[in-house]
Image (tube, rainbow, N blue to C red; front, side, top):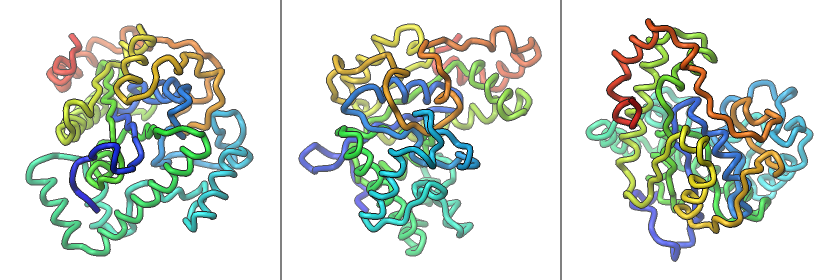
Length: 312
């Protein structure tokens, strides 16, 4: 695999948009909005690691995923390409049955000596390097297939994970543009507490850790390869933000739409994909939900990071 930069269009590499964000920062909403553009193909979170019971899992088109014609086409298309693929096992997540290999592929991005050690580890462990490269090839085949099926020319991966982005970038297989999506940490931690049943201290530590990992990963890219944005800005002024993103990724801004519920899509991700409303609503429930004690804990642990991201 080439460890160099994601060079020019003359290479024939596919264009890949990657949404990097913490959990509950609006990545699913952004994916739905960008998917309205006819040149952008996507299935949401390509890593496909948290779908649960597929007998009751709904595609965002409204059908059970096992009864969805699009996903039937994906399964047939992968078989025609000679690739092992099933709805139960996409083969796109960077994970291994080997404990050491799993650590190399899944450990958080930390920069400096740690990333040098990761690269040396792949260099020394031929079997692990082969597993990583096979997963990269699986991702490339599915990306190519979905672009063909949806008749786009750019693929959007909303998987969020920084380490996944790092491995995809390092492969040199795609021309990658990164959307670095953040949200007020008080809103993100409120959602983390609600959905995972943890207290504020655990939630804010998780959020700070991911935010630092995102910063380490963003440093791998040139300034013109990163689009920094806030969830709140997207909700308040979606027209402006979407136009800026379309120009950033190189597609015609005039072809996009805010009517993401009026566009048939096949998106994986959190439960927001199944909501019936097409209204873009700014979620600031944290202002009513968080107690003074929780806000104090957040400020002590995450205040500095929140201010760095532009929140007061």
